[in-house]
Length: 62
Image (cartoon, rainbow, N blue to C red; front, side, top):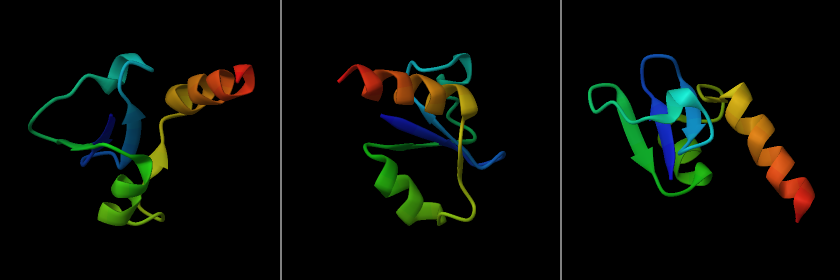
């Protein structure tokens, strides 16, 4: 599950950082990263640095 912060333009992965907790007022939920990019466009979204680092670490283990 992905959370896009509408205020900051940051994309978070559920459980990957402290900021990924959903706040209904300014968060939009997505099942995939691609859905989030389709919603806002690649230029407007940036991945949370902490979430990206943890995701990359998990991918290296596979």
